[in-house]
Length: 97
Image 1 (cartoon, one colour):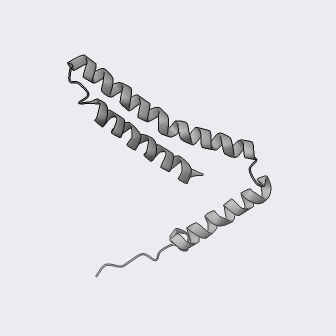
Image 2 (tube, helix red, strand yellow):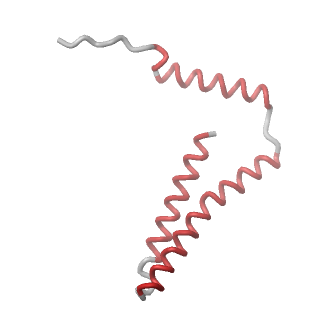
Image 3 (tube, helix red, strand yellow):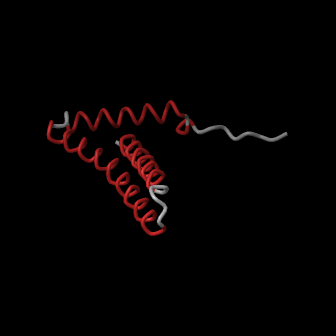
């Protein structure tokens, strides 16, 4: 029979999330509400986080197509891959805040 080690209460998800909420609340009390300018800046950054990889995928796909003479065969997948990468990066950036 294997003996289970008692779980540390600090590792429980409810304790972790409660601590994180308290820390966010303390930060809000210290710093207050964000200004309109800062919110607009975050929206702009979020847009570029999505647009830059999408354009990079598009240009990479066009470059490959021009290099190998394949029409637009690689442009579509490059665009979709860049969009997926941009969306994933934006998702990670939003959830890190």
